[in-house]
Image (cartoon, rainbow, N blue to C red; front, side, top):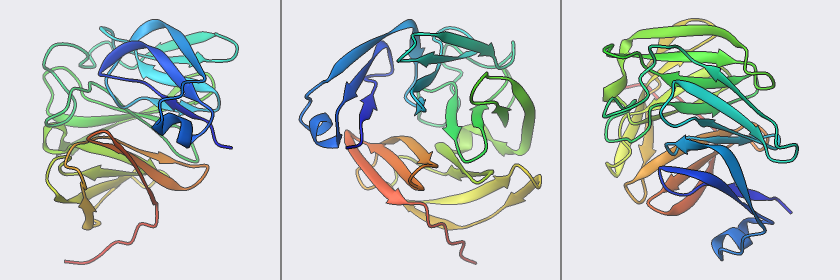
Length: 223
Protein backbone atom coordinates (compact mmCIF):
# COMPACT_ATOMS: atom_id res chain seq x y z
CA UNK A 1 0.00 0.00 0.00
CA UNK A 2 1.49 3.30 -1.13
CA UNK A 3 0.26 6.39 0.67
CA UNK A 4 -0.34 9.59 -1.27
CA UNK A 5 -0.27 13.24 -0.21
CA UNK A 6 -1.84 16.19 -1.97
CA UNK A 7 -2.00 19.96 -1.65
CA UNK A 8 -4.75 21.88 -3.41
CA UNK A 9 -4.81 25.19 -5.25
CA UNK A 10 -1.91 27.60 -5.70
CA UNK A 11 -1.84 28.64 -2.05
CA UNK A 12 -2.91 27.01 1.20
CA UNK A 13 -1.89 25.63 4.57
CA UNK A 14 -3.14 22.03 4.52
CA UNK A 15 -1.90 18.68 3.18
CA UNK A 16 -4.29 15.79 2.55
CA UNK A 17 -3.05 12.29 3.30
CA UNK A 18 -4.58 9.24 1.56
CA UNK A 19 -4.00 5.57 2.33
CA UNK A 20 -3.46 4.76 -1.34
CA UNK A 21 -3.94 6.13 -4.83
CA UNK A 22 -7.42 4.64 -5.09
CA UNK A 23 -8.57 6.58 -2.04
CA UNK A 24 -7.03 9.74 -3.46
CA UNK A 25 -8.95 9.37 -6.71
CA UNK A 26 -12.15 8.84 -4.71
CA UNK A 27 -11.33 11.77 -2.38
CA UNK A 28 -11.35 9.56 0.73
CA UNK A 29 -9.08 11.62 2.96
CA UNK A 30 -7.34 9.68 5.73
CA UNK A 31 -6.08 12.75 7.61
CA UNK A 32 -5.62 16.46 6.92
CA UNK A 33 -2.36 18.01 8.12
CA UNK A 34 -2.16 21.71 8.95
CA UNK A 35 1.03 23.58 8.10
CA UNK A 36 2.48 26.33 10.30
CA UNK A 37 2.68 28.72 7.31
CA UNK A 38 1.04 29.23 3.93
CA UNK A 39 2.63 27.57 0.93
CA UNK A 40 2.71 29.21 -2.48
CA UNK A 41 2.73 27.47 -5.87
CA UNK A 42 2.21 23.96 -7.18
CA UNK A 43 5.80 22.69 -7.30
CA UNK A 44 6.07 21.35 -3.76
CA UNK A 45 7.87 18.14 -2.78
CA UNK A 46 6.88 15.41 -0.31
CA UNK A 47 9.85 13.23 0.66
CA UNK A 48 10.65 10.96 3.61
CA UNK A 49 7.66 12.14 5.64
CA UNK A 50 8.26 15.87 5.14
CA UNK A 51 6.70 18.50 2.91
CA UNK A 52 9.08 20.97 1.27
CA UNK A 53 7.44 24.17 0.06
CA UNK A 54 7.84 27.85 -0.74
CA UNK A 55 6.70 29.85 2.27
CA UNK A 56 4.30 32.39 0.76
CA UNK A 57 5.45 36.00 0.59
CA UNK A 58 9.08 35.21 1.45
CA UNK A 59 12.24 33.99 -0.32
CA UNK A 60 12.24 30.98 2.02
CA UNK A 61 11.87 27.24 1.49
CA UNK A 62 10.26 25.42 4.41
CA UNK A 63 10.41 21.80 5.54
CA UNK A 64 7.59 20.45 7.69
CA UNK A 65 7.77 16.94 9.15
CA UNK A 66 4.19 15.66 9.23
CA UNK A 67 4.96 13.15 12.01
CA UNK A 68 7.02 15.20 14.46
CA UNK A 69 5.42 18.57 13.50
CA UNK A 70 8.92 20.08 13.39
CA UNK A 71 9.39 22.99 10.98
CA UNK A 72 12.63 24.35 9.52
CA UNK A 73 13.29 26.90 6.81
CA UNK A 74 16.08 28.52 4.83
CA UNK A 75 16.41 31.74 2.85
CA UNK A 76 17.40 30.78 -0.69
CA UNK A 77 18.64 34.31 -1.40
CA UNK A 78 17.42 37.67 -0.17
CA UNK A 79 17.00 38.82 -3.78
CA UNK A 80 15.23 35.69 -5.05
CA UNK A 81 11.96 36.65 -6.76
CA UNK A 82 9.06 35.63 -4.53
CA UNK A 83 6.04 37.90 -4.98
CA UNK A 84 3.92 39.87 -7.42
CA UNK A 85 3.99 38.85 -11.07
CA UNK A 86 7.68 37.99 -10.99
CA UNK A 87 7.07 34.29 -11.62
CA UNK A 88 9.70 31.67 -12.38
CA UNK A 89 8.35 30.06 -15.57
CA UNK A 90 6.26 31.13 -18.53
CA UNK A 91 2.50 30.79 -17.98
CA UNK A 92 3.13 29.70 -14.40
CA UNK A 93 2.17 30.94 -10.93
CA UNK A 94 5.25 29.57 -9.19
CA UNK A 95 8.20 31.51 -7.82
CA UNK A 96 10.24 28.41 -6.97
CA UNK A 97 10.35 24.88 -8.36
CA UNK A 98 11.46 22.16 -5.95
CA UNK A 99 12.98 18.91 -7.17
CA UNK A 100 14.56 15.89 -5.52
CA UNK A 101 16.76 13.19 -6.99
CA UNK A 102 19.16 10.52 -5.71
CA UNK A 103 21.56 13.16 -4.41
CA UNK A 104 19.89 16.26 -3.02
CA UNK A 105 17.04 18.73 -2.84
CA UNK A 106 17.22 21.18 -5.75
CA UNK A 107 15.55 24.59 -5.81
CA UNK A 108 14.98 26.37 -9.12
CA UNK A 109 14.51 30.14 -8.86
CA UNK A 110 15.54 33.44 -10.37
CA UNK A 111 16.79 36.70 -8.95
CA UNK A 112 14.73 39.88 -9.05
CA UNK A 113 15.35 41.77 -12.31
CA UNK A 114 17.50 38.98 -13.75
CA UNK A 115 16.48 36.92 -16.82
CA UNK A 116 18.48 33.77 -16.16
CA UNK A 117 17.53 30.63 -14.27
CA UNK A 118 19.34 29.74 -11.04
CA UNK A 119 19.56 26.42 -9.18
CA UNK A 120 20.48 25.82 -5.54
CA UNK A 121 21.58 22.45 -4.15
CA UNK A 122 20.38 21.78 -0.59
CA UNK A 123 20.88 19.08 2.00
CA UNK A 124 17.47 17.42 2.13
CA UNK A 125 17.79 16.77 5.89
CA UNK A 126 18.89 20.13 7.31
CA UNK A 127 18.37 22.50 4.32
CA UNK A 128 22.02 23.57 4.20
CA UNK A 129 22.70 25.28 0.86
CA UNK A 130 25.79 23.66 -0.65
CA UNK A 131 26.06 25.42 -3.99
CA UNK A 132 24.20 27.70 -6.38
CA UNK A 133 24.41 27.71 -10.18
CA UNK A 134 23.48 30.71 -12.35
CA UNK A 135 22.51 29.30 -15.74
CA UNK A 136 23.06 32.47 -17.76
CA UNK A 137 22.28 30.77 -21.09
CA UNK A 138 18.77 29.81 -19.96
CA UNK A 139 16.04 32.45 -19.78
CA UNK A 140 13.71 31.41 -16.96
CA UNK A 141 10.67 32.81 -18.79
CA UNK A 142 11.31 30.67 -21.89
CA UNK A 143 10.73 27.33 -20.14
CA UNK A 144 7.64 25.93 -18.45
CA UNK A 145 8.81 23.41 -15.85
CA UNK A 146 11.77 21.33 -14.81
CA UNK A 147 12.89 18.22 -12.96
CA UNK A 148 16.21 16.71 -11.92
CA UNK A 149 17.30 13.11 -12.55
CA UNK A 150 20.73 11.91 -11.38
CA UNK A 151 22.10 15.43 -11.14
CA UNK A 152 20.87 16.55 -14.58
CA UNK A 153 18.27 19.31 -14.84
CA UNK A 154 15.74 18.80 -17.65
CA UNK A 155 13.59 21.73 -18.76
CA UNK A 156 10.26 21.37 -20.56
CA UNK A 157 9.63 24.10 -23.12
CA UNK A 158 5.83 24.28 -22.76
CA UNK A 159 3.24 22.95 -20.33
CA UNK A 160 0.30 23.84 -22.57
CA UNK A 161 1.25 22.75 -26.08
CA UNK A 162 0.19 19.18 -26.79
CA UNK A 163 3.53 18.45 -28.43
CA UNK A 164 6.47 20.02 -26.65
CA UNK A 165 10.06 19.02 -25.96
CA UNK A 166 12.87 18.98 -23.47
CA UNK A 167 15.11 21.14 -25.61
CA UNK A 168 17.76 21.97 -23.04
CA UNK A 169 19.30 20.30 -20.01
CA UNK A 170 22.12 21.10 -17.63
CA UNK A 171 24.46 18.61 -15.99
CA UNK A 172 24.91 20.09 -12.52
CA UNK A 173 27.93 17.95 -11.68
CA UNK A 174 29.84 18.40 -14.94
CA UNK A 175 28.73 22.04 -15.40
CA UNK A 176 27.70 21.41 -18.99
CA UNK A 177 24.71 22.46 -21.06
CA UNK A 178 23.07 19.70 -23.06
CA UNK A 179 20.56 19.56 -25.92
CA UNK A 180 18.75 16.25 -25.40
CA UNK A 181 15.93 16.95 -27.90
CA UNK A 182 13.48 14.75 -26.00
CA UNK A 183 9.88 14.78 -27.21
CA UNK A 184 7.38 15.68 -24.49
CA UNK A 185 3.59 15.27 -24.63
CA UNK A 186 1.24 17.37 -22.48
CA UNK A 187 -1.69 14.99 -22.73
CA UNK A 188 -4.25 17.40 -21.24
CA UNK A 189 -2.32 20.60 -22.03
CA UNK A 190 -1.96 22.02 -18.52
CA UNK A 191 0.95 20.26 -16.80
CA UNK A 192 1.62 22.57 -13.87
CA UNK A 193 3.55 20.01 -11.80
CA UNK A 194 6.30 17.71 -13.10
CA UNK A 195 8.43 15.84 -10.57
CA UNK A 196 10.84 12.91 -10.44
CA UNK A 197 10.62 10.29 -7.68
CA UNK A 198 14.03 8.70 -6.99
CA UNK A 199 12.41 5.79 -5.11
CA UNK A 200 10.50 4.30 -8.03
CA UNK A 201 12.44 6.08 -10.83
CA UNK A 202 9.27 7.57 -12.29
CA UNK A 203 8.18 11.04 -13.32
CA UNK A 204 4.88 12.29 -11.91
CA UNK A 205 2.76 14.87 -13.72
CA UNK A 206 -0.33 16.77 -12.61
CA UNK A 207 -1.98 17.75 -15.89
CA UNK A 208 -5.29 19.62 -15.89
CA UNK A 209 -6.56 17.69 -12.87
CA UNK A 210 -5.26 14.31 -14.03
CA UNK A 211 -2.50 12.48 -12.17
CA UNK A 212 -0.10 10.86 -14.62
CA UNK A 213 3.11 8.90 -14.25
CA UNK A 214 5.75 7.63 -16.65
CA UNK A 215 9.08 5.82 -16.29
CA UNK A 216 12.18 8.03 -16.34
CA UNK A 217 13.79 6.19 -19.23
CA UNK A 218 15.39 9.19 -20.83
CA UNK A 219 16.73 8.62 -24.34
CA UNK A 220 18.39 11.51 -26.09
CA UNK A 221 17.78 11.86 -29.81
CA UNK A 222 19.79 13.73 -32.40
CA UNK A 223 18.32 16.34 -34.70
